[in-house]
Image (cartoon, rainbow over all chains, first blue to last red; front, side):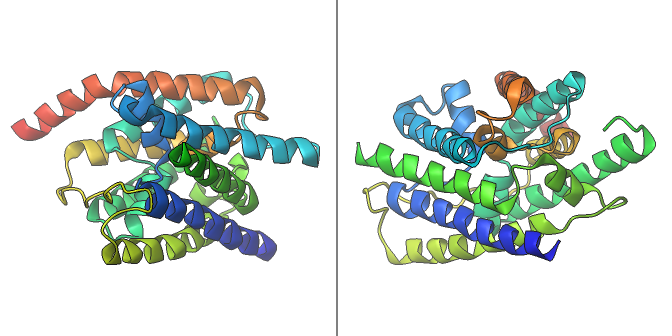
Amino acid sequence: MQQDWIFGFAGGLVIGLAGAIFLLVNGRIMGASGLIGGLVDRSGWGNAAERLSFLAGLILVPGAVVLLQGGYDNHLTDNLAVIVAAGLLVGVGTRLANGCTSGHGVCGISRLSLRGIAATVTFILAGGAAMLFFRHLVGAI
Amino acid sequence: MKRNLYAALAGATFGLGLLLSGMTDTLKVQGWLDLFGAWDPTLAFVMAGAILPMALAWRVTRLRGGSVLGTAFPTKPDVRLDPNLIVGSIFFGAGWALAGLCPGPAMATATFSGAGGLLFLLAMVAGMVAAPALKTRIARLGAAA
């Protein structure tokens, strides 16, 4: 357990480093939902190549590492209805709120943005409530 | 070209950080949200680790006129908390709990989380397509209230 915390903190530093590179070199906020969402709703087509390059690195490099490691189980549920509902909620929610864990959580809190802090507190509380409801009351997940 | 290379570098670094942190494992994310079960505090350590270099980077932006590649730094958004921010975050939190995936890790695990992972991404994109119409409605309701 404590080893997980150390890996968590170390991985967090690397995530923050990634955000720092994207901010200081490219001048952009590293928000995963915004980078994808801008491509989906065309609002980000002006810098599509930059977005696609970021996403290519994000998809392919962990993919290559896992391939070399010999596999990785991310323990995703095999309940397809749950997966679809989750994906829809994450897609709609992050675009309504203009951000997710990386944009509001990492990039927003670190600049003491009131919106980032409010969004992060809200999605963690909502996630906790959903977990209580769907896991402990309904038993669906 | 340079801009795309650094974007790819940032994306790759982000992905490696997610993998190292354990946030690509849906059970660890769900564990963080499971306050009434086997609570797993790892995500808090990840957040703390990530916020440190980012806070430093934001300080550096105050000392410079713009980014290394010449783009102006993003301005701080309006401080108002609008209904879309809160409603959206509630939706997002619920979806995050259901599958244990948020957009970053969903992309980072796309090549190795099987059909389920791809289905999640498809549904997420569908949700993103639906969002703008809903956003206008929520904003109107918020203005009326």
